[in-house]
Image (tube, rainbow, N blue to C red; front, side, top):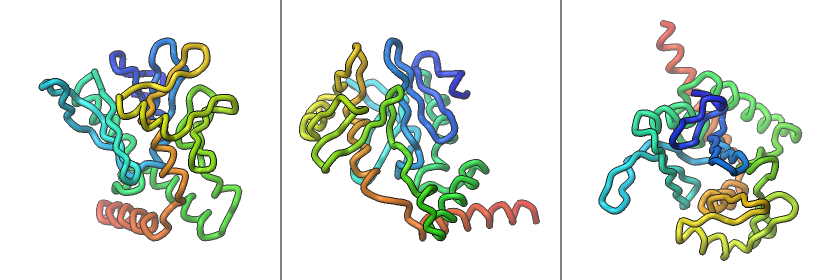
Length: 203
């Protein structure tokens, strides 16, 4: 599965470190796995029925995303993205190489590399936090965080121009994700653990 091979029922795919959501009639939504604490495949319960999904965490915030294509599809997405998250073991070489670049940037205080990547995009618009009280979508649309929290409480979407929308719960993930940088100690430990596993395989 790649970004050009979106899951047909869920409208979800993976492109590198990005979870990509392409609902019909809506701009493409991209969530950056590197800004998440965790992402795993889970069973969801809705009105007594069991379904497959993804459990996404940033700090104390938890978001669940329904995957209509089933447990195997949800697990495939989790397997491909979990290595990029902050707390999971690194298991993919591309995630290892990215982690090494980030660690080197931290050690050398390379500001060009240390600029935080976007957490969440919808189309070309970056979702950002302003003054810890406003969530902005691009340059024109803004919501008070209290409004976004109310939308999220009812699993509702934020209405955007031209009939577009964005899950309020996803927008809330930007708040804790943007308030922190890479944890150098944790990043070093994850890199060392990956290198140790690779050395064991070679020997």
